[in-house]
Amino acid sequence: MATWRCVKQCGACCHLDPAERPDLEEYLSPPELAEYLSLIGPDGWCIHFEPDSRECTIYEKRPRFCRVEPAVFQDLFGIEPEELNDFAIDCCRQQIEGVYGDRSLEMLRFDREVGI
Image 1 (cartoon, rainbow, N blue to C red):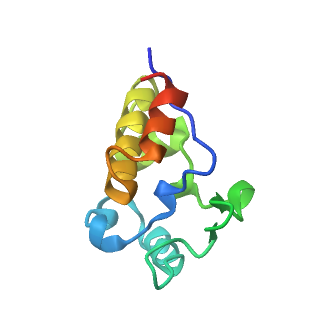
Image 2 (cartoon, helix red, strand yellow):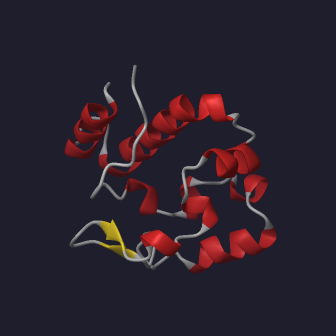
């Protein structure tokens, strides 16, 4: 069985381009939406994403909407804790495909790390 985990130095979730996430207003509160939009750099990437290391520079203090945790996903998306694993895997795969491609090294690494 595949088990979700964050794969270091992927960063696909740090590509925040709102054109690719038209439903932001459906799950983020107005203050969260404002915060989300304030994090987007001119290239569509989070201003806290370090491209050389491909890591978040504020990982320990990242916003709630950046956290893959049962309570957060239940609140934002209505995902029950027992559904989080499969949902998070699907979300990551979609985001990685959109940012890097479905045959990218990042997708291969993710699939291997989660056990697909």
